[in-house]
Length: 289
Length: 304
Image (cartoon, rainbow over all chains, first blue to last red; front, side, top):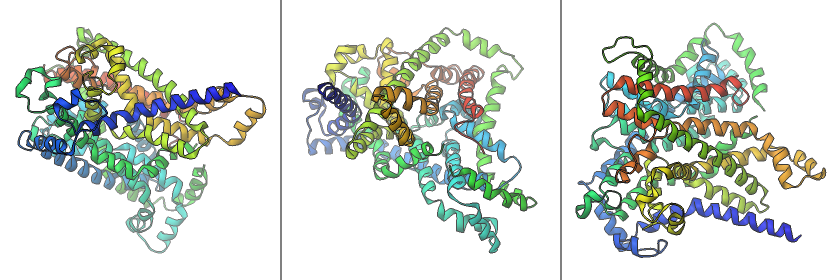
């Protein structure tokens, strides 16, 4: 009895320690953004600063390179949003057709999709750069948005959804009622596919927003940077991580903290609001086999 | 579970209208196929072409591969990425499984849900944001865990990011952003194990540890392999972490730490697209092999 109590205590300690490991950096990030540069070093790391300091940090951040941060955030929104729309426009019909229609090359397309889906996206970044540099598209919005829109995982998710959750007989009756292929898809299948559309949209959005390597390689011009790449520019202008900038530093550490916080906010908000349904989506595969 | 039923119902419909439906299917996949060709197949073929030719466009055989592999930075980068991968995959497998099993055994539903959520949230962060956050966590002058950082790695930021510490540091960052998702997946898979099986093991006198080792883990095998292969493929592509750390380390860490960084240097510093393509193909081969392993094995993702 005593041993089992000891084990229970040990389990609780391990679980709590890991909860701390995962949560502490986020908590610190929020608190540190409210501190002055001196306070960040001097005060207890987990003591809050003040609202006034937070506003000061915000003003400095917005002044950085004449509002570069706002430009980068805007770019991030533009790239991620365009890519999500394009991804949905091409993936949903493709997943639908792969699941419920028969056509030449269907099996081959499925296999290629599976292979590419399991490959890390970064594996293709340099080849895509070499290709786009050959056709002269580097440093355009298209050079980031179009490769991001290619999202085989989205096709796979819609394929699984349509082949397990939408009965083919339902579509057949629609066709018997005189619906063409497009009308059947748009009026019958699409309304049923709302959950998977949201899921694909979410995964594609997070991945695009957090994508670093692709825009880093494609966009040499600072005006076109998304936030993730802009952050590296700020890192280079922060004295803690680059002594060369010294007293003339454009960015103080708490401002870099605030920029980091700003860069994760959109994803974090979407994440928190869709948590329940995400977990269901993540584990959907687990119940399949 | 439901898939066979559906396909049985769909089969007659498919064969009945074979004459006209193929064209409709092709229209539906056309957009995706265009992107697949443009950003999957053409870049691969183009990179292959570059990797096997010289700067003048003449066929060069394996010259580019040999030349890049003989670069003094290449083997070092392979060693760096390899060390990181071993550490990261071992930590990932052990800790994710232990945590998933422990959370799964909790009796209070609220604590299970809360822990899964807390473990999972950092998964929203990736790319430069998560690395920057960890640069602060690793800087003893501002870190909330400066005691641990000082004890493990040193009392100044430069000492902390010494090259020898990097495999550990990258493992911590990767674990922080990636482990939560896998814990949730494993938790889901544990839920999928029929209750009767666990009950039978208990009746036979198996304790929680023996049940985990003999019953639960073997039944999770597919998911464990899936996690490890995907993480292996992703880990070989290491880029943003060493890139930012080398930028912030006052030159302690070079910009040639990982293979992807080296490929980047070939393309952008040396203007050697052929060499860059050769390294990119090396990395692509690893990624395709990992992916192909699954598709060939079938089990997890049956195409039909």
